[in-house]
Amino acid sequence: MSLTALVWFLLIGLIAGWLAGQLMRGGGYGVIGDMIVGVIGALIGGWLFSTLGISAGGGLIGALIVAFIGAVILIALLRVLRRA
Image (spheres, one colour):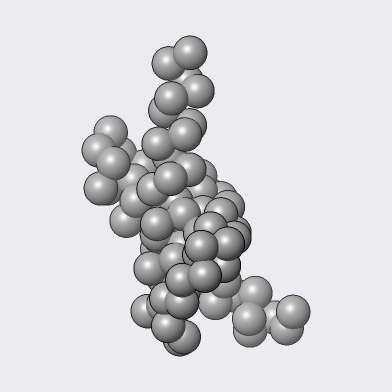
């Protein structure tokens, strides 16, 4: 992975994590926490979409949608585990 691709991946993760934190209420996890949630969410979303055979389209918007959905799923799982 090139440095440029890594920077874009982290930027998309940061945006997706922040958006997911805003949607799920209760605020985010800070800049680093949102980035981690977004990056892990991107991995979860990518795996989920490929498993289901769904194509989110290419480019920046498609990657952001996949990362956002993955981050929302991750935040929901983290909240369920926190309650247990």
